[in-house]
Image: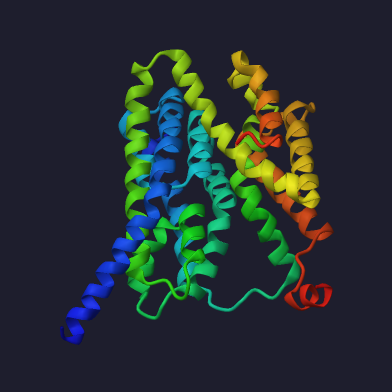
Length: 248
Length: 83
C-alpha cells in the first residue's frame, strides 16, 4: 500500500471513529431536541420554523431562550444579547479547542466545523488523546447534527398528535436534564452550591420583587448568569497550577 | 411575533460568531485569574442558566402549574442521586 492510500485510509478511520464517538451524543440530542420541537410549536412557531431554528443554531439553552424572546415579541437587541451571553461559553470552548486541533485543521475547516462546537461535542473532543483532526471532528458532529434536527422535527410534528399528558411529561425531561447537570456538581463542590443558591435567589428576586419583575425573562437570564459568575469568580477564583502542586 | 427570519438571522449570526471567531483568532492561553474563574463557573452556569432562571422555582409555576410537585421532587430526587 503506498503512502497516499494509507493516509487516506487513516483519515477515513478517524472519521469513522468520530461517528462512533458521537453516537451517544446523537441519541441524547434527539430526546432533548424533541422537547425543543414541542416547546417551539407551543410557543407559536410552525414546525418548519422550529426545524430552521435547530438547523441554524445547534444550541439547547440558546434556542429555548430564543423562542421565548420570539414569543414575547422581544427586541432584536434583546435576542442578540441573550444569545451572546448564553452562548458565550462556546467562545471559551473554541479557544480551548483551537489549542488541541492538528495543523491540518485549516481556517476554512474551522469556519465550517466550528459551527458544531457544543458542550458535549467539545467534551468528547477534549477527552481524545493527542491532537484532534478535522476528520475526527467532522465524524463526531454527524450523529449529533442528525439527532438534533430529527428530534426537533419529530417533536414539532408529533407534539400536536401526542396526548397532552405525554407531551407534558416529555417537556419535563429537559428540566430533569438541566437539574441532572447542576445538582451533582453542586453536591460535590460547596462553592458551586453557593453560586447556584445565589443564582436561585437572584432569579427569585427578578421574578417577584416589584419593579424588578418588569425585566423580561431574556434579560433575567443574562443578569443572573453574569452576577452569579462574577461573584463566584471573585469569591472562589480558580487555583493556579503552581498553587495546586504546592498544596498537593 | 416580529419577523421570524430576522430573529433567526440574529440568533444564527451571534451564535456562529461566538463559536467560530475565537476558534480562528485565539491561540494564547488566558492568564488572568479572574477571567479564567469567571468562565470556569460560567461554562457550568451558562448551560444551567435555563433551568435556574426559567424553571427552577420561578417561571415553572406559571408554565407548568399542573406539575408543581415536580418543582420540589426533581431537585430532591437528583440530590439523592436518582438521575
